[in-house]
Image (cartoon, rainbow, N blue to C red; front, top):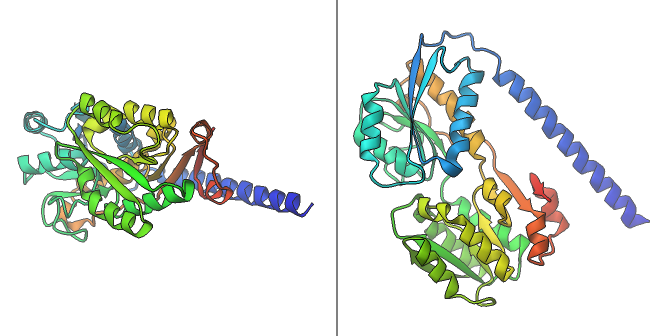
Length: 339
């Protein structure tokens, strides 16, 4: 009887929390979409350099945010898009093409794409989104002021990887040996490793690293570890590995082990959980900075921002498939449960 009453109270509390979140989002959306009093540029030209694919929601968020600020595509803003379709090399010609279109502002997605734009111009303003540790990556001098033509919204600094690892342990406390595949090509995810290693040491988790160059090497690396030889997989972001995320999901489900990732979209595909910012929300947030720059504010005068919110998404169907019991406490912490 007591247990039933407790469960009922917990259920009512969760419903209240969900209702308040829905009301908050609705109010925020209404307020955000009230047309601003400040005059818009007569016709803005915004160049977009993006890897596309899984990062498409960032660009969608940008357009959504700018639309709420009064920018209507085809009326007072034109988007010139260079989608590299997952490629993170040979970006110089793509940036040159964008600059040749004479944009008022460049919008870049990911650290590598932002670095390519920074290398190409010191005069055209650049607003970036989803860049990991932009100060460490050399994009900016500091969060307070870039001291150059860049500003933007990060995907948080790499220290969030430690928290993500803690969430993994909350979900699967028996994990002792964790596989990490590191892309041989430069990737933003590399800056996470020191933080990941530090947290793993505290949690007494052994990190098993393998360097991979292509899909075949990912398959080879997974074959190296038969069922039972590793307890989980921690996905380290890189364009090449993201393109082959299906192999990570297949291996995790086949071996019935947890797969920890950064993006909610990968959880929708079958990973166990993600913890981090929402790409679309980051795009919306970056739109406010792009608006200020389009109106004449220098990027160096704008503080580089971190995401406003972090989201925990858990795939309950995957948890069941790999035989994992999910503690009630962490379910109540989740922002989204996929069934």
